[in-house]
Length: 100
Image (cartoon, rainbow, N blue to C red):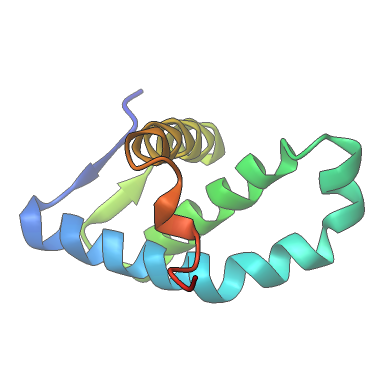
């Protein structure tokens, strides 16, 4: 089967906004609650948490469909790779404080 669908640019922007909110509010709580598992898996469990955020966005947004957990996990791996690439472009400055 295919990964899923998005109905246009507006939906894609909405997905990005909702994922941003989920990643800033819900994700830290999940990471804290699953810290022992995350430590045992050397951080790889965070990809599962990210997949859960994608599946939650799927539930919240009409016009955005992810066809199952494995596609959500694939989405989270791609998201992780893109974030890593973008962090190398700015030298990681995007996550650091600008205070001297």
